Length: 224
Length: 416
Image (cartoon, rainbow over all chains, first blue to last red):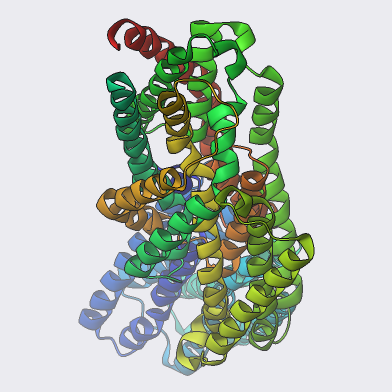
């Protein structure tokens, strides 16, 4: 027995999107224990964290597919479907980058040079701050839908996105400093290791970039 | 005499069966919104539905019943052969009931009202003659099927916009909700009471002057609003849940309002849909007991009560399950959105009931939900389902008519 009233509602993407950013953030947060283990050379612990990261990335990926499947073109929504799909895509990239960067470090058993390790952990933490702030912003999505993307709730989210931007700018500064510090000591490293170290810094920095792009996508929703 | 008793018993059985079906299926649409938004528990919803469906049927169901009973078929033509009207009305009840069974089995979103009107028009036009149908009346009814969802949608849009404007978009939504929700409660109580008093009660033999009607409606509405305000003041914010969902307490305030609109919706539903079951029954009774087609015969109150009772039985036996299933699927309708849809639909339906228009309560509610959606209130509406409603709309009328014609000729051949 199908009921008209029950079927008229499509699957709302709002809570699933909030859940997705939660998973992506939890995935990114794993980088902290991962790098701590890598710096101290505890590859057993690193392997364990790395498999957590893979599992979370996989979970985020599955949820992404599920949300996409539940968003057919016949849905009538207060905001364009495409914008929500774009938001989902950048959220997912947070988890993807996390997996990429941990994969490189794991595969090459990379030791972060001691001279920059403290700075490096600080940089990772700031990137995780960015994903945390992105999660905080996306969590307002259901409230935004309730308020029809107008009024006090919009100002609140704008404030959250501004803070997200500040954090991202901060990670850029830290990234520049980190590269400078690495440049100072790069002659002491094997050339290939040095090249990969730059690569790891770059990929880690992209996590905050993706978090910032989550903010940009949310902002687009606000302007509707 | 013997024949007359058979007719009345048959019509009563078919009528109760229709009422049972309405209670089992359609009431869910009226109540599931409140259950889905957790404004009411299932038990409370059943209680509210039983009381207000019955009240709506008895107090305000007279006008639509009268339309179904004698507004569609021109009884004058049948003064020589009153039994034809009996066969026809029996056939119409059976046809609509059969069609609804087929449709719900197949999962088609068909309307009880469309089925019964299609069936009556069918037997009258083919069984008696094209002239036997009051086509201008049928035209008005069909127009009302288009207008009622649109009206409900428009009202729902305005209500939800006002909610966003006055409450949801402000810095202090909770304080504002506590201030404005009693006002909405007042309007809900006022509209439903006023229309009922002015349009419905004369069918139960009560005559109240316009001035008194307004006064009574205001008094009743104030009483309900004060009770509502008292309930609202007892709601205390929960900072823990608030942190995750800023509108949590605000929605609980709207939950109080939703109890009122749920009552209105059940009342409205009873007032309009009871006619689908007992309109034909009433026609059969008046012809069979007098032996003539008397257009002036008044509607016995026990018939309305029979219809209301049938709905309540359907609700209690089968409706409970439907309500909880549907309720689980419509969680998108939070109290702030659900109340807007329900109030708009209930108002539209009660006005239709007052003017004797048999409309589809489900379609009206769907129109109201779409109205909230246009006001950017619903996260996702599946337009394919809306399209399917239009298709079943078009199919139901000829299907009901065809079945009624078949049953009409069978009854004509078999019954005394």
